[in-house]
Length: 480
Figure (cartoon, helix red, strand yellow):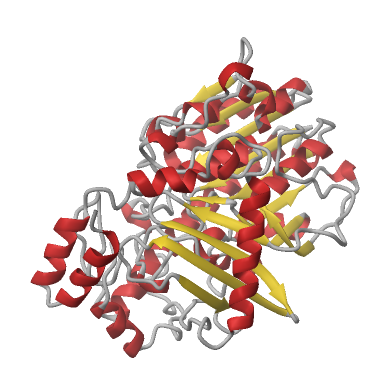
């Protein structure tokens, strides 16, 4: 099977037309969705970048593979110890490794491994082509390399090509000629961000907050003190999304030119979403809320597979369930060590009863995505809040409040206890047959990468900007 996996960093599902977005951000992706299978409720098991791609390529929860932080001990997978053979199990039990064992040529076009020093994600790839910008490049750097690779290999029978785009990652970037693609049209829908909500965000703390948005770990970005400025943030995000979509169209055109489009599996996915003001996070992905953990997942199978076109899967899935399914469709066995479950041959029923997602790089949180009495809910448990001042437990109604403006925890103690119980059961089950401890423990001892060493200078900033009460509260929570 020919497989093209287009991996768009930080892409939110709800900013694509095929997921109901009003702006014309994604005509090429929308066309793929109309021809294939769209997972409506797909979540990354671990966020953000390094943990998510590690989980996707290894088919495991971060609590099992260990690479959950962006620096420190837990930015690396757990050591395989005495059981390690001449070669690491990653070379055969990773997603590309399993496909390679089944006879596929495997290649990645990405600067991800260099950006994060995450060399383990290259396991199983025959070729690793670095786009050269350490994640700061735009799509123009990746697409020509993909064009060259497809020109050489598209006609071959079995291959897997991973192409990684960074354009919508904070800060979103596009060529100057595209800068006002959406800014001069209808403004984004910001009904959820009332003036009162924005004023509350202004008073509250946070390393991505309205008053303290960071760039390169410094508090030198322009603050978001008006709704117009938030609209401009979203304009930039949507413009970058449309720019990447143009490049998706170019790749699809190459498949047509090589006369293999009908016989190529095309996957559109992301490593995580992006906060665009929700929970007082303006740009970035420092939480594991619904907007950050939910990812688009579109699978356009080869026509010969006989699978339905335009199918919408409303079940709950992890992102690595899609990877397991692709292995199944390609005739490659899913490794026994995987947590991912294939849904090949069962598109009408099943799915996960509930999901647990983790964020241990920019905060320390786990969330439970579940359903109850026809409703859609997210329970959010916080150990370290990235200095946002969030309560330890939160609960959101994702149907009535998709932008997470109202914490239902005080009113719905029954659902709060349900989320708490599911998280406890998941943790117990996940650790039942492993020798290592929960990586959450190590991260809390070392601190998440985003906040490490920042408590004292940030509390000083809070005092200088009239928020001394928050400096006192954060010192109480997090001082050694």
